[in-house]
Image 1: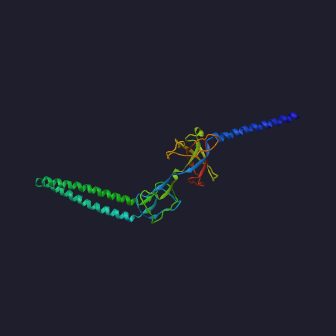
Image 2: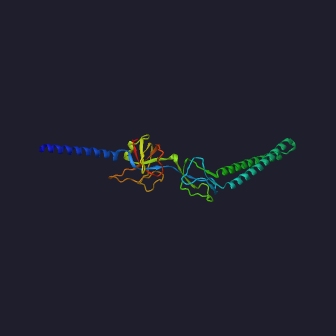
Image 3: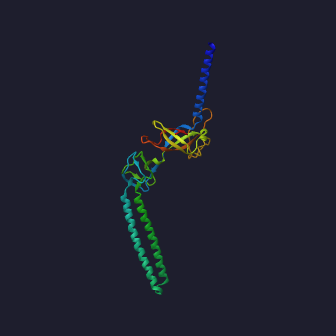
Length: 287
């Protein structure tokens, strides 16, 4: 009887040990080998919308967090000033055209005179015509530039996106080349996961990815688009500032560097709101 109890206890103990080994092996593989990470972010390109001309803002046609399409007018810089400049350049162009016509007629008249006109008079007529042609081309360029400035006094969205952190108001003075509106490029939304270098051999472009955004129960599906080919070297005293610089994760003794992996989102359910900067967990090879 005692031997049966001993055998029973031994079998139970061995079963527990074997189960613990399998569970431990599974946990080791999941946490240390399988390509997944909690260190991922939902990212999008932020486009700074800057006017190409300077002046006072006359109209702001969008509101904060508004969705816009590429080509939509966001705001206008005082168009009256540019309309006046265009009218002035058109008037100068008309005057230049009249002067060119006059020199053209004079040059033809000198040529018709033949030997009655001196060589010097003919050369002067040709020179005057060439100068008038140059002035006409300059006036044409000035007119085109004035028309372009007037057109660009309407500042348009360069991408599809969402207006963010809007503070621009009518009456503000804007300078050419200075960004005044931030536009979140919704076409560039993607997930960037930072994987330990030991897991990279199991990650390949095209692999299916399961994406879990923090605070949202529904998962998204995506695929690996690309893997970064360079990260910042922390051993150097001065980095380039252009490569990814990810904080190391302190696990075990030696630190594994983290490398950015770009993940495209394949489908977005209607009830899921994508906000650039959200934290995500990604698992490669799962769908």
